Amino acid sequence: MSDAEWLDEREMAAWHGFLQASNRVGHHLEQQLKEDSGLSHPQYEILVRLGDAPDGEIRMTELAKSLITSKSGLTYQVGQLEKRGLVRRRSCPTDVRGVFAVLTDEGRRVLGDAAPGHVAAVREVLIDVLDERELELLAEGLGRVARRLSGEEDGADRDESRK
Amino acid sequence: MSDAEWLDEREMAAWHGFLQASNRVGHHLEQQLKEDSGLSHPQYEILVRLGDAPDGEIRMTELAKSLITSKSGLTYQVGQLEKRGLVRRRSCPTDVRGVFAVLTDEGRRVLGDAAPGHVAAVREVLIDVLDERELELLAEGLGRVARRLSGEEDGADRDESRK
DNA sequence: TACGGGTTGTTCAAATTCGAATCATCGACT
DNA sequence: AGTCGATGATTCGAATTTGAACAACCCGTA
Image (cartoon, rainbow over all chains, first blue to last red; front, side, top):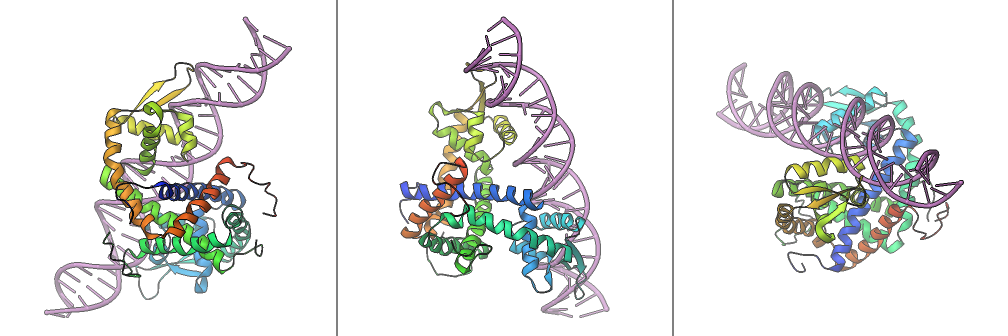
């Protein structure tokens, strides 16, 4: 790992690009979603997970872990979605404490309506701006970065660099 | 550009990786900063910009544009920093409406204290996880992505549906 | 000089986020 | 069964973000 204490030209460019892209892309998509579907990005993500899940239902905690929000944040957002009738709560039969978030028909419909536009936006601002090579390495590299931080130590690769 | 309407395997991986990495990295660094320096990431970024600027001062609006926050958000954060004595406000001599945010000596000191740890964290979670090639393409690709969204139309190329 | 459109920064209310505290329950172990 | 530590989800308050509304001001132009 290069020189401690500072970043060289290229490292700086990568970091800056990453930071800027994160913010701008996030912002842009937030707008796009809210404008086109009246959904916030967190809400959209919740619907997507539920849409992919078998029976369209997932336990709250599991949902919170797959997303980035805190548990309380999820409680809030699911509450919002419930108000709009896009999601329903169902208590878990085998564990009284447990709660499933369930995608309603209406929720599935709204998700279906929102998805194409969102995907198009993602393509427009990110995917189509990158070439094959970049896309490939982005997926690989950032995937690794994300995995590192989620498991915190999934031992994926024994890279000794202790910290 | 592949098939409209959806993302193929690799595109999906790139998008997902990007999204996850953005969130996780952002979160992680937020924690690191707050823990080590008592600064939020937005606050740290304000200090950095001011630190790089000549005389350590920048006009509010310009600062808001370089960051991602709204004008009111900046007003709030600068207010917070002012409370801690890290930043001072100075009204612009040539424009009564104008306000400069100025880095104080204390602010410069705090920034100096915070920077090494933050850089180390950035290196740990992002830079050192990527290899040379990835770093190169990340800088280039994401730089392009960010530039696209900031200028909104830097004349790169006419953006018809046909990217 | 006076006009009018655009700028500058702040204030305000509403929405969202987080973390700590809370409450009830689960599960393993004695 | 009975106890104890961990877990699931919510509630609460504090901090933050945003957009709209606002007040004051700049400047080019007639």
